[in-house]
Length: 478
Picture 1 (cartoon, helix red, strand yellow):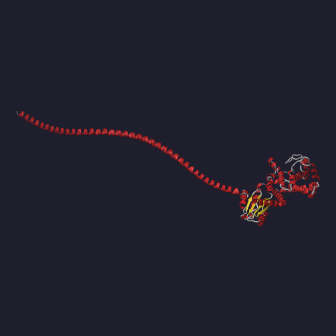
Picture 2 (cartoon, one colour):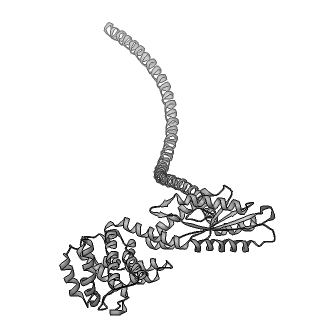
Picture 3 (cartoon, rainbow, N blue to C red):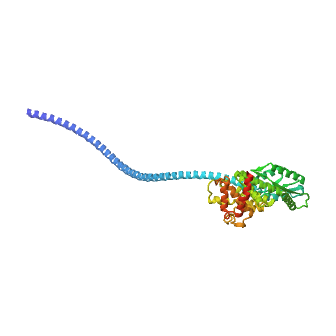
């Protein structure tokens, strides 16, 4: 029993312990249960929070997805915008390049405009100058700078009033201008006109009106000037002219004048009287002027070519010998002698390079040389007392057989004096030193004359020249 009790006691104690343990465990479990409840509540709360968070995450994911879609859309828009921007930048660059080109073009155009503006300014200045020039030329002689006929006629009309009386008109005429133009060329004639204009201006008063109204004609209008004062002015001009030359050419002017004293006098009649007076003076001075002009031309020609001077003098002397041998009158001998002196006067208008050329002449040069007989004829024809000599000079290169120049006359169609000059000139050309041929002896030259008698020369005159004229001239020379 004791053992049962013992076992029962131990069993009770064990049970108590177990109960306590169980109670403890129960408490623990209760605590655990409470904790579990709390944990479950916490878990439920957390689950609720998770669900809430999950819902928020869903919403956030949706928002994020939306945002991603927006970003993708925005990215696509940005790509498009970047492409558009890149295109615009290219367009801007292209436009910028176009603007650069346009600016360069504009700068060029501006330069062109500036250049054009300068050109227009210059053109306007030139136009203004030309207008002034035209205005000047409309009333002035272009060559001399004096007033012209148009201005003279307007001034004559303006001055033809009683308050300008006495009104004197002086008319001047430059002597020998045509001859000088023929001999020396128009350039020399122009220089002579310009020098004459200067002299007339120097001889006149400051307010006198000087005009060139024709080729060689000048008019001076002298308001409130009588005949006595006009004569003083003319004398002053002539004195100045006597002191001047143009090259080797003297300046010779013939003057006439007339004065309007009463208002009833017609101004054109006054002009005509002045013109008539001038021509009367010119006619009176004519022989002297012609002689001076011929001397001037001869001197100028010989100055130009000393060899021609000596040749002309020898030909002149031989022509004189021929005239004496032929028993011509003194007048005819003098005429023949003068024609011999002037036979090559036309060469004054021939280029010196051609005249003095040492070699053979070209066809063109020979054609030019052949002009000298016609030029000489034209020159001498202007002189009233030399028409016969002009003909002798014209035909002195004709040949007996008709193959000469300038007209191709034959035999006795050629003037007698021209036939003499042809023989004499040929002889002197052969026996004198010339640039274009060698010098022949007298014997060789005579042989050439004889050989060409009846071809180039009159055979009778050749015989006479050799037998008598040449012999007498050789005797005189010794």
